[in-house]
Image (cartoon, rainbow, N blue to C red; front, top):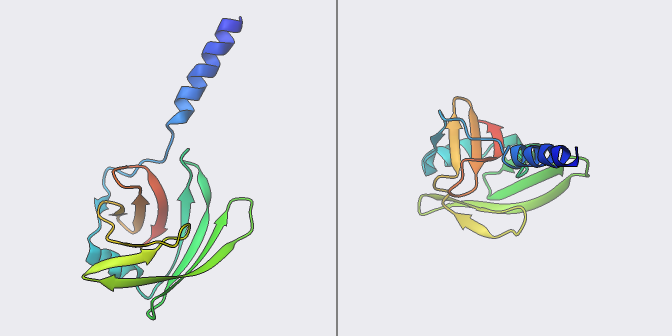
Length: 135
């Protein structure tokens, strides 16, 4: 009996360890020009996912024409956190400060995707969705 319980627990652990939300097969990488067009001057609301593929919270980002990026992130069950960050287009690439460490990063090759009217972000070299938003 104990062996059966252990086996059942192991199977459950294995099956839930890799349930990250997958990028749809029909999603296509976005070019820098597409990202700039979708984001610049717009207010976008989206969802972010944890490593387990479950919704971890919501976010709203205003990409103002003056280079301000006003981000409000609400982790599920917590109070919203708000930061004013910077973004710019430099040498044809979208550059933006990240919410966590505020480091300016330019170019997002293979991390922004579009499928119909929905955009996604992933980590580099990953097909697991980290953010989802209408575009």
